[in-house]
Image (cartoon, rainbow, N blue to C red; front, side, top):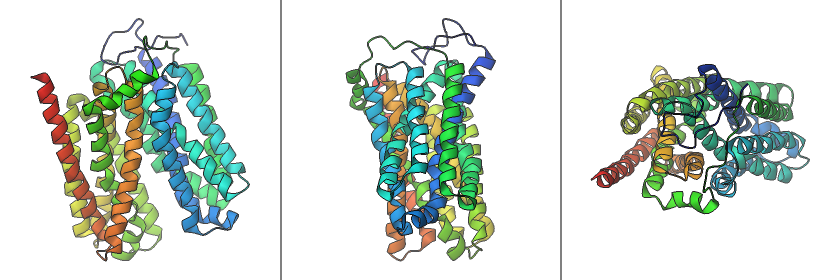
Length: 405
């Protein structure tokens, strides 16, 4: 494949040598493959915790620390790597990030002790956010401005497909054979992604004036911070619900345990539908898509709490809450818009914000359950978080208008 220069600016429709539609599609496929591996590796552990606990002779709650360790790696790694790698070409950075991810998962499968396994999961989480941020920038830079969100959405499609196919398959084989097989498989996906990136992603030059100080400048921009706050607060709702979906299914809707897997699949289908539809809508109206998804979340999360005892309504609401992922590509694109010349740090931090949303939603949902309000009340928690996200969005919109006037 001919090497095509990647645009430094995502706001321009022109390129030195316009890539063919097939070349663009292959780049997006390569980047999405990495997203598929990352998504599978992140979520598969949730279904394998009892197996991990048995291997290392710890309790299942103690084994859950490895999930927190990975999430901490994502939160820490995204901004740190984006700043330290400011002078690296994006293609080289993608290869390095995927190499760390691949080796980390293979090492996870070989960990001799629980302590070493936990540490390795933390290290493996470090490239997560930076990979998605840089991949989004590369994908968006190869298409016209009015197609950026769809390009970002196709990269993120790897993550959403992982929730639907990769995670269930990794969990099945991990339980049937050995949990170490699941992590070895994810590591192999990482190596395959490296080969695809090496072959299909065009070489690029380091942007003129790139430095870690310039990247750090992203956090001096109020709009970057507000957009990250929308993600961290406004989208904690889906995690408040999803973290406790197993107990809601069996103890509220009184369905058999086998239906928990069905609910997880419905959530994954919703995420994929939301990603595709949200990408298309974001290219039509970026801010309208973000606002619309927040309002949508308030409605469906409230409906979840009101109807969780009805199996059919529970299934419908779980699917619709998954559709709330429609805001993912929109927020990623918004960050690239408001970050100016510090796009890498801003785009990478989006996934740190979503991991904060994950932790915040699960924590607040747990508090409400512990307070005796029941598992169905997690929907109200989510609706409240989305409502709070609307206030942050309104502040961002006011700042936009002030800057234009």
